[in-house]
Image (cartoon, rainbow, N blue to C red; front, side):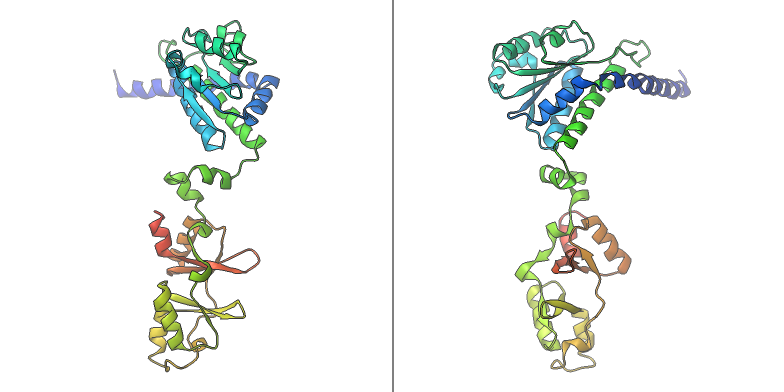
Length: 319
């Protein structure tokens, strides 16, 4: 078979899935809205469950729920019947995925939920399936054409199920007024965590900021720079930034002036400043552009909050 045929089949499969996915709009109804309210206000845990490929989707949705601050874990219906049911409590919500809705492994979990009045949100394509019959909230998936060459392997159906799960999560984010700050709280690592890292999270602040009064000398400034180990000092007048002096400024200044001369003679009156809510990657971009290694960090009101040094960025993997 020609490699061109591989590409043709791949494109056709994608086209079928894109076309079939449009049917998902039928699911966005009052039951969907009710499911969002129940999941977003759950006092316990959202327990995602499913068998086979539906189980894989349930795992992914559970992970996304955890990322947006909803306590969640995955429970395999097959192993749940051997003791894992004990993890499920009355205040929890079961979010169960099954395209057919008739997987026999679901029966024990559904009986347990109904026996102890545990709320069930079922996602399936068969209205009369055991899953939807036992569910408090029923999300009925439309029938779709599978996108493989035999039209029987779960492709379009799993895509639709995953999109529905992600759509629930997106609506829950809106309900809970989710923000980047909250996401960062649950997602410290990886590239996403780095992209959300702010200057205020890594800068030197408080008493560690190297400062000196404008009436001090070049020699005094050199001592502060050496002690604080950031390569610069902020020259202040009554808690207001006047200028900055780097270790390089001091070395060059001592070639022209005495160490007893005022620091103002060599200080830079136009230091580069950034807001404390600037991302770390943006700070690095500014440093590279300006060919500098430090930035003064301020609040929106202009108050000095800290120093961001390139070493802060590198130590957090920003490069």
